[in-house]
Image (cartoon, rainbow, N blue to C red; front, side, top):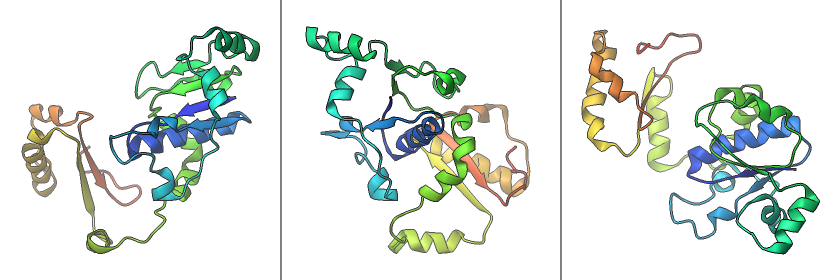
Length: 210
């Protein structure tokens, strides 16, 4: 059996769900561990079900006990040997990379990580697009914003925590789009994981920021 640990905010959960589906393509028994959200004070807890109506096959407490390394009592260690889960713990070694061995690894595994790489997603993209749809129609300001951007060439700027970069980087990219002037060398500092710029264009169109 394979168990995927779910943690973090909605974005991370979406990547972990993609990885969960990736594993299901290769193995019969794949389950989720969402127990870490009990008493979780960051973000909004486990959101996949509330936002998208996604329900996961969850691992039970006995399996989690055998697949994770926390319990070190004599009985648990003996059970791990009996069930072959002594080395089940499989943390992501390096973020934003693809591990090709995962798809052919037949051993029991407990996967801890974020698994953010296109190769985990590419074969299940249609299913993800279908499943990642809001359960409820947008209302209020969200609905108004959707109407404003629909049918336009829309630019999305995602800013995460590093507020000091917001104004200079936004002005920089806005100027690039409107004038076509090349980006200065220092703009490379805007392309960190804390600040991403995502032009949304029609299929096949080349982004003005490339």
